[in-house]
Length: 341
Image 1 (cartoon, rainbow, N blue to C red):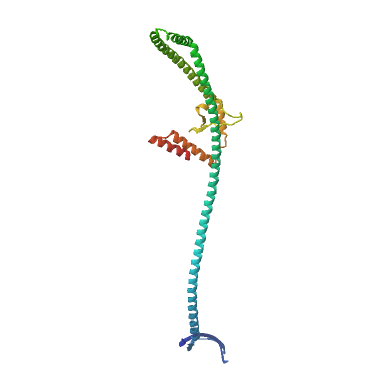
Image 2: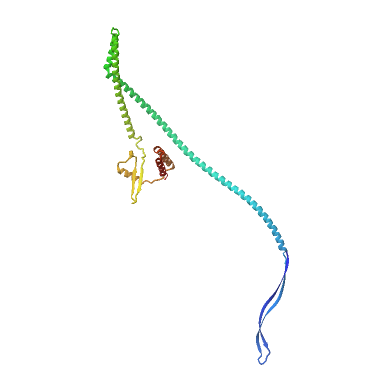
């Protein structure tokens, strides 16, 4: 809105001026400097008229523009919120899809790895099953041959026993034959009753004597057969324990426990422990084995070997430490802790 103002103020201006004043000629005529000082005062009035119409119109226009800008900002804020929500939904959907895609990929990879592992183990099991069938077939054939051989052996022993019994008791058999002959002859006489009684008593006595003799010889034969079979079994067992099947160039693994200790004096001691049936009686061989194991570059086993070793150890623990008492549980826990370390 336009307005007018009047301003009134007294303005003071100090002044100072020096001039040369000449005076008329006389006895002492001449000139002299004269300094004039003072302050001039003047009342000043200023009328100011301020026309604010352009400013008011510009304010109105600015207000309109600000209102439009406010509406634009509100619309922009609404659009930005909608865009942020859409983008957030797209980003979250992308992240979720990526996460599930990664999970599906990981699961697919694990599935493929497990399928390959299972296929490999199935192939190994099929091969082992085929090998077991072959061994079963071979054992059945060996059993059939062994059975036939022992049947023939027992049949020969029975025949030999029968022949020996007849040879040993040939007089008895001759007596029985003669008695039978005499019995047939005496049946046609008047002494039939006497002959029958004597024959009955004599036959019973001879039968008892023959049975005792046969039992005695049969017992001796069975003892000899038993001694023979025991000796044969021991011999075969000794041969099996002393021989190893192979082509002569095969390699065999022997379990060895290698210990290396460092004392407080920094003395290093090495020791090799083997099963009693593989123990090295020669100290030079044991020292050579310790030197070989000391120079070995130990590397970590593969996961398959570690899994097989853990399975074997757990089986041995279950077979040898099957108790449920505190001592057995403590031993199993200590073995598992040492195995994990």
